[in-house]
Length: 320
Length: 291
Image 1 (cartoon, rainbow over the protein chains, first blue to last red):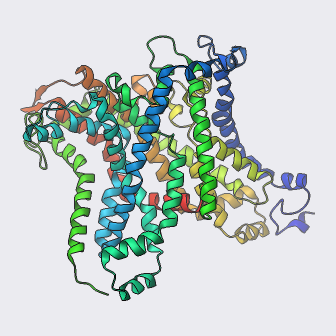
Image 2 (image 1 turned 90 degrees about the vertical axis):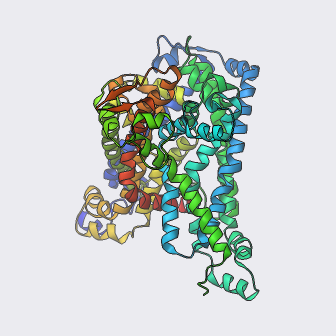
Image 3 (image 1 turned 90 degrees about the horizontal axis):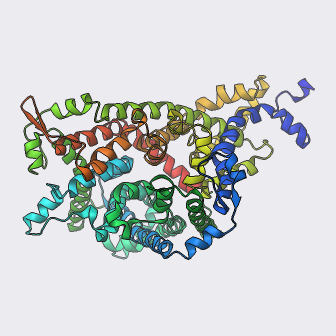
């Protein structure tokens, strides 16, 4: 037996139980990862049950999930009838929409320009520099934003003063929240997001450009008639994936950037859930917060799955 | 090919230089302000070059425990080193068996991983579970819960999957078992993937804000991101966190003290950036193209 199997990995032959038994060491290696998944991924999913209960915060703990009173869809009814929920939904979608409007196309334009640079070193340098903001934490990015926009000597306000405009307290103006959030995201992401397009551009057949040269096409014309159509597939996939992510806001950034004076535009579903549980002056309402959060997760899930399906249709590549 | 530069090239280079400046200038300005005398900083007279050059600001920020900057930096460093080590090992150990086609149930297990990645329980159910596990105000909340990231697991698994199967077979001919094969053959070969995953985890842990903001209330456990937020954003609301004093003939004001704190929290990223950039690009291309 031992000699007969020599030279074959254990588990390469035989029936299922035999296979499992012979791969027992592999399962042992997998065990820590499985336990981790059970504790930190699956157990919280079970915890979502509290969205249908009146979770007892005072008792707390996992066992309280089982003890608490079942209330069915009461919390869902409550927030669907609450005008503030619709405001949160509107804020979430608007923030995501404006974000997509700028964060999506800018990396494509940027990649087109970088691709036209003829000197490798310049290309490299520009990429290295523009890639950097991606590595900065939201805490640092927001801190820099604060110091630049400060009404007391922040450089932006100094410049405005130079133009004869009164200083603006940007972080306290509801009208400035969305533009600032989007600007910060563009700043942090455009270099990183352009990588995928630049990679796609290096795979374009050089003959296409030669053919365009014969037709007397100029540089700009080649950019839009050769380069851009050649990466159309990548653009479509990235767009579909971006749509799938539309419910996902950058919670870190929002929590650090917002304050009660800008809730009107800045408060989104996730920040509201956060406050319900961790930043309320009164009694934390876990069940209600979890119900709102569950709603968000379900919508986000459906969007991501549909996006993945769609991208499968367009090409072989997909997220998972 | 034509090598003559045309109008378009000049336009293009100017645009790209402007874009590059926009990316670098904010941090450059912060560095210049942090090295300036507070008087110039408060009067907004520092743009490119420090005025009243000094390092007193850094000395003060680092030696003043009340601000919590040095403690925060040290905490973040500890979280990043321990967290990355644990995460990389756990991710590799999970990815390895899942890359073997003979593992019964590997598709189902992978599907569960992907499902939990796409369908999030949310911060409240997480909190209830983590609290029961004793992770509130614990060092380990920064290490354990995010030790297996599904995206990085997929990167690692695709890499291991792409290695030739003959490697394994020849190891078994020599009488090695699964553990020995993994450790002696696959682990060294997986070095590029391990480096990529390492970079992703360490940057993510260093930049982590939400988890410590929720779970770490003890001052002695707070990472630099939370300290920075309290110092600059929350502190500026009540104006109490930073004072203005004179040290060794240099005026320290909130402006240059804040700048020093900000720069200190990016400095480690700057140091590892050249290395990190390379592997980040790799990871992103593996992750989003091949998936």
